[in-house]
Image (cartoon, rainbow, N blue to C red):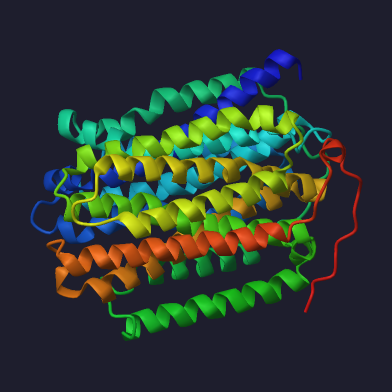
Length: 480
C-alpha cells in the first residue's frame, strides 16, 4: 500500500469506530421517545432490551471475528461486519413495532461487534509488523472511541428532542456506505492463501457464555432478585458454557481463543487491565449521569453535556501521546500512569461528591478521569499487538475488546448492586443515602483502578529503543 492509501485507511478506521460507538451511546439516550412511539402502553418495561440486544449480539461475535481475521484476512471480515451493521441499521429505522426493533438491534449488534474489534486489527495491518508499538492508529482509535462514548448521550438527547428517532439509525447508512466504498478503493490488506478450519463449536460456546453472563448482570437486582431461580439458572449456564469452552479450546486444532496466549505475560496482564478499565469506565460515565439526573435534577439531554470534560481529557492526553513517546515513554509507562491518574480522579469524586457539590468541581474531576483513560486506552491495544504472535494478531486484538465488554458488564452489576443496597428507599428521589451510596460507588471505582495500576506495574519493562522491532519470544509459563 502507498502512504496515501495508508492514511486514507487510518481515516476509514477512525470513522468506523465513531460509527460503532456513537450508535450504541445515542440509542441509550433516546430509548424513551422510541418506546413512546412504538409501544406506549408496555414498552417502558422493555427499554433495556434495546441496548441489551445489541450488546449481547456484539459480545457473542467477538471471539469469532478475531479468528476469522486470522483465517480469512481482516479486509473481508471488515467489509462483512460493516455490511451487516448497515443492514441492521436500515431494519431499525424501518421498524413498525418494538419487537421488530429489538430483533433488528440484534442484527445490528452482529455487525457492530466487528466495527470496533476488527477495525483495530485493520489498524495493526496498516502499520505493518515493524511499527506495531507506535502510538499511531491505536492511540487515535482509543482517543476517538473514548470521545464518542462521552458525547454520544448528548447527541442522542439532541436527536431525540429535535428530530425523528428513526434518523438515529438512518444516519448510519450514508456514513457506512462511504466507508465501504473507500475501503474497496484504498484498502489492500493481506488475504490468507491457505484456508484453515474455524472452531465454530468453540465460538458458539463463547457466545453462550458471554450472553448468559451479560443477562445475569443486566437482570440481577433489577428484573429478578439475585437469588431467583432465573438468575441462578443463567449463572449455572454461564459457568457450564465457560467450562465447556475452556475444554474445547484445549482440544480444538484451531481454537477461537488459544489458551497459549495467556502464557504471554503482556497479554494476560493486558487483558486483565482492559477488563478493569471497562468496569471503571461504566462507573464514570453511567453513575455520574445518575448523580446529575437524580440528585441534582438535571435533564437527561443537559446531563450529557457534563461528559464533555471527560472527552476533553481524553483529547488532551491523546495529543500528548506523540511527544511523550518521542521522549521515551513506553506502553507500560502510559498504562501505569493512566491507571494511577484515573484512581486519583475517582478518589476525588468519592471524597467531594455531595448534594450541593459545585458542578464545576465535578467537571474538573471528570476532566481528570478522561485524562487517565486517555493514557490507557490505545496503549493497551499497542501492548497486546506488540506481544502477540503475528498469526494470532486478530484473536489477540479482538480479545482486548472482549474482556473490556465483560468488564463493562461485571462493573455495571457490581456497582449497581452496591448502589441499590446502600441507597435503599432513597434510590428514586435522590435522598441523603443515595448520595452517600454513590460516593461508595466512586470509591469502588478508585479501588478498581488501583488494582489495575498494580497489574500494570507487573508488565515487563521494555526499553523504548527496542519497542519498534521486538524480537521473537517464546511464551512464558503461567505462574501457579
